[in-house]
Image (cartoon, rainbow, N blue to C red; front, side, top):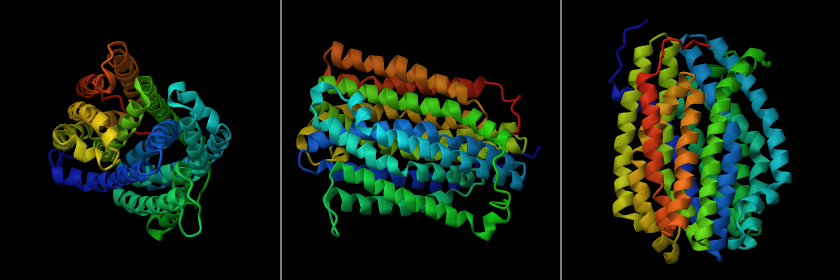
Length: 453
């Protein structure tokens, strides 16, 4: 067991985390820009309400399968820590095959049933245009899912070997293209007719295809292709596939539970009113200012914990979790304070509709407070996942989301008639419950039986 020498080396943590944070933050920027583009169309209320349904439904499906990155990431991080480089390549090759097959099936099913899915999650009160616009978005967005899932496998590989800058470069490129293509297809340019919200889905698909080509090109460079024997022995290894699925499936279910919970939350705001639902979409887009960097810290801790476990240093693995969660909490405290004291300034980034801003501002103050507590849960949950505790993290999410968050949103917002503010008042209860459960497990759970797989 090597001597623990980086237990409080925050520079080392940030060196790993910052490129990942910057990479996922580019996704946040794109989400804000996409919402801003759609929010400035005529009939913005219907488009934003539809975008809320379309984006969350997209996340619900994508997140179920994008967790393949977690399984791939964890296995590669442990092998890399153990200096089993050829084993890293075997994991990537197997993961790519799984991703491509699943991507084709999911793409076909969702494209075929796009309008049915949108109609299922819409309530009658929002009118017929909202589910129609959402269905158009889903149709075009899911054409690119096979390519997206292949990039998921590549991300897991580069995260696992600590090359988070590759993800950063990918994020900058694909999201810049996303903005350009979305502008072209939403409003119409260069001979293309404006498609409204449907253009946002198509633009994202074209950008995703470019992203897949980028990762393939980088992985083909001799630096990676030779060291990790990539493509030299391109084959499906059953035992590795089982390990990927075993680690990923609870994460898949967890992601779906989160997003179905938020879809249920959006449906609840639909009962409050169409304006409340549109305002909630702007809040959800704004929340990513906090969430995306937290996910970046989570990526870093999965790599750091996985590498430490692979080298047999359990104490180092746990200490990285504590130190990274401290740094992340400082960030959420700073941004949460901005949400609380200047909500209208933040909301203006997503829409110029003063009615929506006025409705959303009081709720965003509550969200800013609740998110301060979320960083600990997100970061340490990723550490637990790296240790193979993916099932426990999933159960913690179900308890916090479905038993706490959604029911309280309905009780406060609809039953007690506190409106949108009452619905969003359930978020702090969700964040505090989730983080408390995760922290307890991380602190007192057994790490001695973890095996390098």
